[in-house]
Image 1: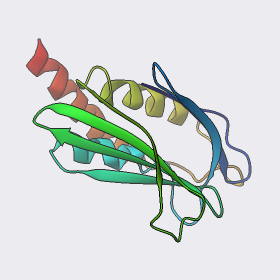
Image 2: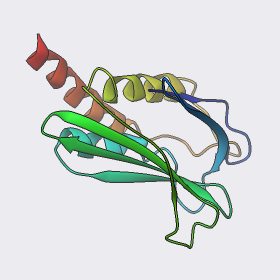
Image 3: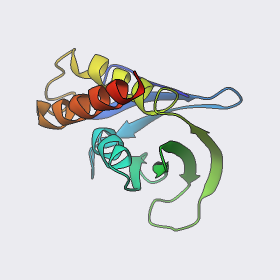
Length: 145
């Protein structure tokens, strides 16, 4: 699975998600929540907790869930026409190692934040969460070595 983040413009972030069999493209709003809570979701997954990221489309939304299943990661994407509804369409579910799932998303986040986007296009980034994620990724890599 690969996630690509484009250049944000006035609070909208172009997102592309591709798997071997599926793909979606959309623009996520930074209101009412930051779609890049993806950083926190990866931290949670590595620590063994489930987490879901909401990419708000106003009014619909995509939901990326990341679950740690004993060191194997399950990533699923669903869509709702109306974010205030619990009715969702499951688009895909994939499972893989950290190398297959978590690390590519971490690389995407590092690349995105390296551009230093600022208001009015995107909120300034606090490096703290990305630094925490980087430490956890290094620990994962060292365990594998």
